[in-house]
Image 1: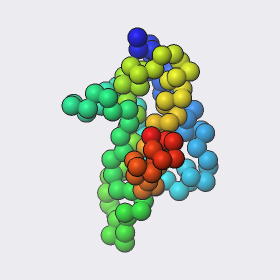
Image 2: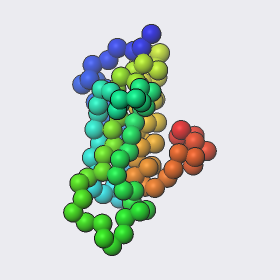
Image 3: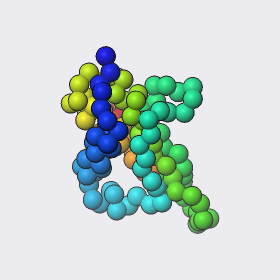
Image 4: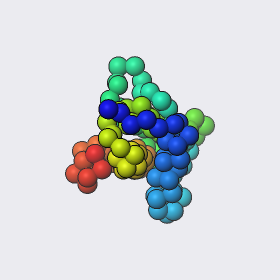
Length: 117
């Protein structure tokens, strides 16, 4: 049975996860926004998070005037796979780190190898 949690509480957990990211890394993040959304894009019901944009490692001299990258954390899929509030805290933290890593150019294979899959 999925965990029930208000959007406000879930957003607090995302903020808490961001607070755990070292200041040095947060300071290196550039032109990116982190959003909480209830549901992932159609056709991807199991997606927990998504990074959309140009990773820092792909930005060159011609990177200018673009809209911010987006990191979306999807509330309902995360709640659906968790058994209790503690699981939600853990899954939110992993998902936030996973998507931030994509901003730094780290791919899924490397993230899984590091235990952040």
